Image (cartoon, rainbow, N blue to C red; front, side, top):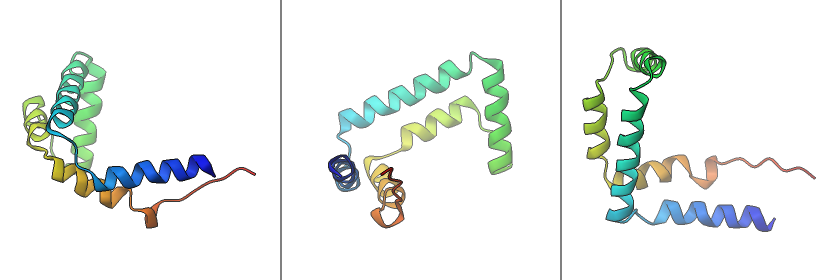
Length: 96
């Protein structure tokens, strides 16, 4: 019960507080770096192109993906966090 309460507290904090500019910058650098590393593996590139085509009906260049990552704001993340981490939509599986 204590762990569940702590998890809900952390999720509430994520829904309430925006990332600082330093946190957002670090997250963007991490994502852009990961995207660039993934392009070194031809299998990852093919899988990424396939997923993009299946989901969106088109492919996206690495430059386009990086531009989209750079365009993300703290408020964008907060909006998604409030949608995805809404307490009403969370479910709990307990083992007793």
